[in-house]
Image 1 (cartoon, protein in one colour):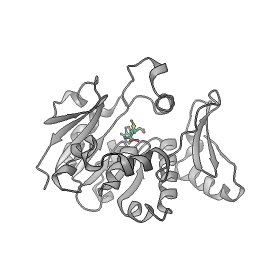
Image 2 (cartoon, protein in one colour; image 1 turned 30 degrees about the vertical axis):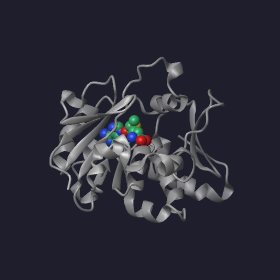
Image 3 (cartoon, rainbow, N blue to C red; image 1 turned 90 degrees about the vertical axis):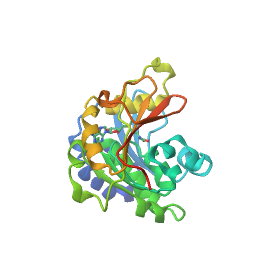
Image 4 (cartoon, rainbow, N blue to C red; image 1 turned 180 degrees about the vertical axis):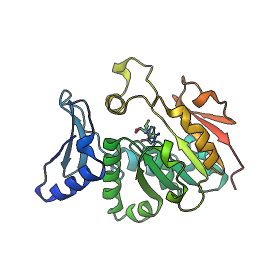
Length: 253
Ligand SMILES: C[S@@+](CC[C@H](N)C(=O)[O-])C[C@H]1O[C@@H](n2cnc3c(N)ncnc32)[C@H](O)[C@@H]1O
């Protein structure tokens, strides 16, 4: 997939992104294309010109709003990883996507290691992180707490040397087919899903995740989805449309 670079001085950076994530070798629906402009890297669709380009922005917009007003450690995701117990665990987000959940956890103090296998998603996330690292307000703690590795968690979860220190929590949020009529599903979500597909191999992540996590594995699911790998969790935290299935290995300290 080609990056259309709209800023002359950024051509070298775009070439680096292409090489790093092997974007030219990424066979995709030709309706998709990548664009680099003054707001960063964005995924666009030729047949949906009105679609807001999909990009990762941790500095402004929805992510910044949630960081400031989202409810802090009272949020369901924070409770699910055990933040309400006073801990700030090292979380391995093995299905990082656009990094939204990881950013919530990092902004609440967790060190978060992110794994993402899709080359285009990983490139969008990398670019969003690089821009955030430069921001005076959030850059210093983001550099310390959020690190991305591009690759499949089916392989990376076995590669201990990648992590500094112990992994307390493995977080999984694989794509699951939407049940609602497509018109009701948020447009951006629908486009993202058509890019990534359904993560039909996600069941196989649970066992290595449980072997790695010293404290717990948290699986985010739509409320209608079955348990991952048909395994009943130790406990559940429910929100309006989702639930967090929590598999406890040991108590949080
Ligand atoms: C639903 S999205 C995750 C959204 C994310 N929680 C967020 O807040 O932005 C699922 C992502 O997991 C990635 N993924 C699925 N299986 C994976 C695996 N085995 N290794 C690495 N990434 C994986 C997909 O490519 C997709 O980008």
